[in-house]
Length: 264
Length: 355
Image (cartoon, rainbow over all chains, first blue to last red; front, side, top):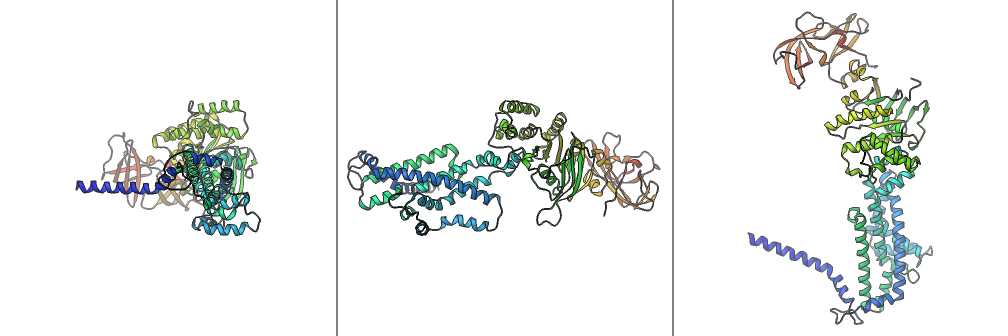
């Protein structure tokens, strides 16, 4: 009896370990390859250097696309949270006709494949002349980020006791003051989590971006995609490692700041 | 009445889609510095009245006058009310001092004056030194005190309290009951509090307004409400008692089914139907027979409650409830034959409810 249960535990632990290794393997391999000195992607590397990292920083296309992605992500984050706040307020606090329909529409982008969304968004954005422009890509990204921000903010808002807001009203705060001094601070974790998620989604979104942007508003993921069409060298691996580190950095910072897991 | 501080006139609230009004033509008034309890079972409309006075609910009709001025059209945040909520509703993201200071900030009071007034308010509710604490670090009783301080620091027209003691445990409740009464007396603020607990209402309020199903049943001092209930509802809601249906047989005498004639004090036309009530503590053990209002019967049931003994005595078809002090010599046992008497002035004549 003792032995079989021991055996079972060992088997279980092995399975879990293998599963994690399988999940992490691509990242580990990319990390190792990024230090390879050869001019093509292969595993295992023959010799190691920081050469690829230097090249990434010297690649003007990557650098300018990085700044564009950063700006687009920041704008998408801010706009998603603002729109998400208004939507959440109306969904949580007010009763109106067609509320269930609005709720479903907000959820819809979760259900539709990105490639389908991409075609649809392109067909909407093209006639209004916003293809390959900042407003165009921001609008396209908002479509997929707002469902997430509405979720995180709605969760925070539902946890706010409306009597606390009433107490502020009674003691002299105008409705606008109640919003600024009471409601907004109390949903802050949801706002920050929503902004971070929106930023991260926008920052590494490729499918929809490929349909919307070409040259002027190209984002880092689209630049990576185009780069891979013609060349496969460890620069891509180095760039990937940098992007992973940025994502981890943002998540850890927010986790420390407000507790991302609690907010989601 | 016209010079009273607070006057509520024909207040009505009918919620959209509701068949009957939640508050139905309620009128009452308070002189300055009075503490009034709105008492009634849950759903009687007492909280709705409190929220209408605060401005959180818009009345369907009627007036709320403060010093003669109708405030019902003034928005909630300009009414200058202080309100203590049932679960206190302190601002969870602010310190105790910031909570108390909030109303002053909204009134654009300068920093130095704000700090001074917050300090005084903390002193008033015995929370000196707790200003920097977070709300979550306070006990239930301390949160209650902080909520009272937040309401009083703005020197409100009126202090409104919604079931202020219902979230506290029994021991703390007694303590806070005295505390609230004391704070109200010291500040002289006019106060209205809502409760479903008759002991709370009787012990804390200068006057009680008893409500049922949206209507005001009776308003009066605790003694008036307890000893001279004017409606069946008030008589049965406040305290215990034995009720008698009867007919007036002569001046101050009623014929009651299955019992000797009952003598009472009060005006009632001969021949008219009456409803009478005797409180359990007004029934006394009689030494001898033959006194007016004496009933002989057999003890059917005894409950020992420490200071008092509650007897159920079978007199003919009636069961009489009597509370006897346990220090009163030899106490009756179950099955004993006893004679109970009640003084005519202790027999309450209940005013007939308007049909």
